[in-house]
Amino acid sequence: MALLNAEIAEQVAEMLENLEDDVQLVVFTTKNNCQYCNEIVRLAEEVAETSSKVTVAAYDFDTETEKAAAYNVTLAPVTVIVGKQDYGLRYYGLALGHELSTLLYGIQRASQGDPDLDPQTLDYLSGLTQPVDIQVFVTPTCPYCPRAAVLAYDMAVASDKVVADVIESIEFQELANRFNVMGVPLNVINGTSRVEGAAPPHMIVDAIKTALA
Image (cartoon, rainbow, N blue to C red; front, side):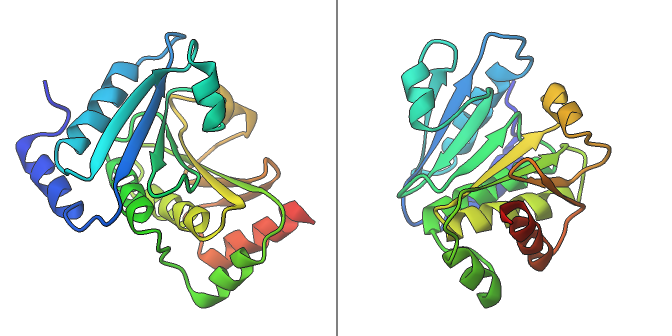
């Protein structure tokens, strides 16, 4: 049974019809207590079927360790969204519900390489000299989560110092518990600074400054 029905597949095709560079969805799955790994690969394949610009490569995280290391992947299941370059766009878990739009936005941004950010935010990100890991905890039923996730993706496209990890918190319960995720979206910068909700860019920038201080 398809994860995307005909109507949704048509909408996905419309969203991806103006892609510029080719995009590869690099999926790492694991046999270690992974409830949705098969569905994650299938979703990537169904999305790829809607656009000639999108392809899929699937790997076993547990055995293909060199490939995982090449993408700096330390947890699975994960979908790495790679355009002309690896901009640092990651989606951990199954991107359905509201989060399908996050995955599709990541594909668009990886293809175009053009972040949708205000000049002040772009100027700050262009001056980064230290690595920044933005973790955005989400759930598929959260209507506000995609706003936080796509902002992190835009920031990762804007700076090669930024990696954006969008994490489905129910599937990664242990990680969510580690960061005491009580509500979503939750933004965690470098494991220290926290911003709750779908915050505007200047609040995420302030959190980055605090994390790097």
